[in-house]
Image (cartoon, rainbow, N blue to C red; front, side, top):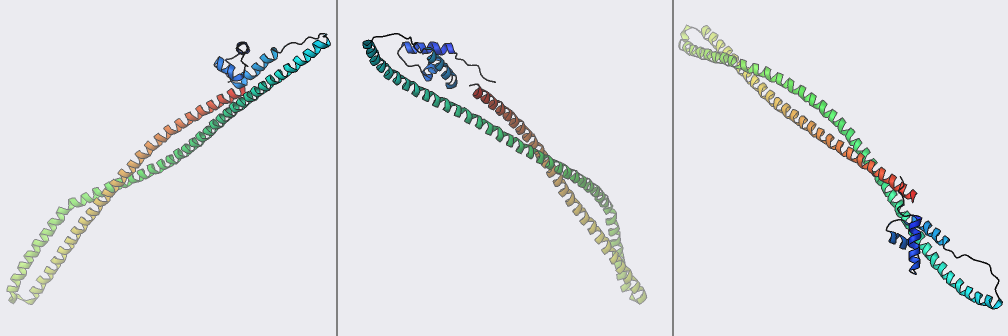
Length: 292
């Protein structure tokens, strides 16, 4: 919207008359300085109007030759003086035109600068929107990974419960192993007794050796089963620890993504506000330049 001029033709006329009464040639700069407001483009045409309204009127008369010669000499002097004044006025006009051109150039550069700032803000907003969309995609991926990790954790909990059930059965296996060892010791004692009673017969001795061998094999099998159960328990405990760490890492990444998205939303809002302010300021500058 164009701004209303704060200086009028009456103001210019009054100031120019005051300067002329003091013997000072009125110029655009002097009038702006005296009034305290206005611009080159506003004051210059007003000063031209004042100058055109202060030209002396000419009347036709009949004069004697002597008076004509005197008037010619006087006219020559006046022409020289008027020429000098015209040259001064021309110089002032050129100076005012140059000032006006510089002012218009400054306004054009300021408008161009604001337009560049608006373009940069628009590009920044587009970049932030792109980053926001990318983070939303990454958030979806993190959420999917977190869901998968939760599923893995649930399966690990199930396997751990099974392992705990198997551990609860270990005392029974250990009792069987102790019984087998006791039986083996009994068999060993029996074998010793049988050896001492070798006279009973080689057949009885062979039978006892076979039973001892069977008992040893049974003991070794029970020990291997016990060791395998303990190894499975260790592996399942390690898997559960790894799963818990992965779930915690996924949760941390999810929280970081949420905070980053919130920050980018705030940056995007500020960038859009700055863009609107720059667009409004550029519109005002265009209006001011066109009005002046």
